[in-house]
Image: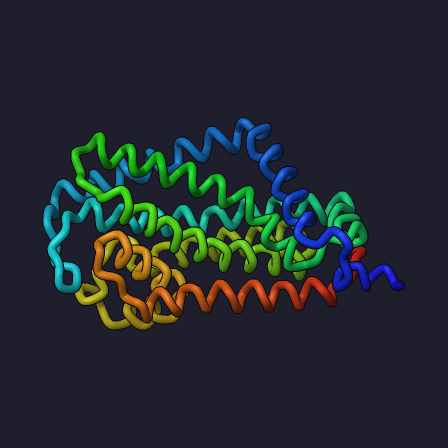
Length: 266
C-alpha cells in the first residue's frame, strides 16, 4: 500500500475523529490567550454594537413579525463570530503543515473527512462558548429569548460553521506563504461579515448592497439562524445553509485526498 492510500483506507475508522477531537479540546483549554479573546469578543460586540445601535432603533419589522433590534442584531453577532472562528481552523491547520503533523495524521490512518470534522472542534467549542455568553448577556440586558429556540438556532449555526472551517482548511492547503495568507484573511473576513445582513435589513439598503449580500453565503446562514430563533423557520434558507456546508466538506475532502503530503511553509 502506498503512503497516500492511508487517506482513503483507514483502520482507525471513527476513532480518527475522536482522536482529533481530544487533541483539539486540549489545545483549546491550554491556549489561555485564545480563551481570553473568545470571552472579550462577544462582550465587545454586544455592548458596543447590539446595545449601542439598538438603543436608538427599538422595534423593527422583520418579515411577518416585530422584534427588538437588539435580538435581530444578536444573530448578526453570531454570524460575525462564525466567520471569525475560521481563523482558528487556519491557525491550527497551519501548525499541522508547518511541523509535518498533517502528513503524519494522514499516514496514521485519519481520513480527510475525519480531519475536517476533527479540526472543526477547536472553533466549534469556541463558538458554543461565545453563544452561551451572548445568551447570558441578552438575559441580563432584559431580552426574552426562548431557550429551545436559541438552542435550535445555535445548532443551525454550528452546521454553518462547518462551511467556513472547511473553507479555511482549503485556503491553508493551497497557500503556503504566511504573509499572503494573512493578507487574504484580513481582506476576506471583514467584507464577508459586514456585507451580509448582520446589522441591517435587506429591504432598507441600496440595491448594490443587496446584490453583494445575495452572493454572500453568510446571508443565507444568518437568515436560517434568525428564522429558527424567531420561530418562523424558513426551510429554503436552512436547506441552502446545510447544502453549502455539505458541499464545502465534500470538496475539501476531495482536495485533501489529492494534495501533497509534504508542503513547504514560508
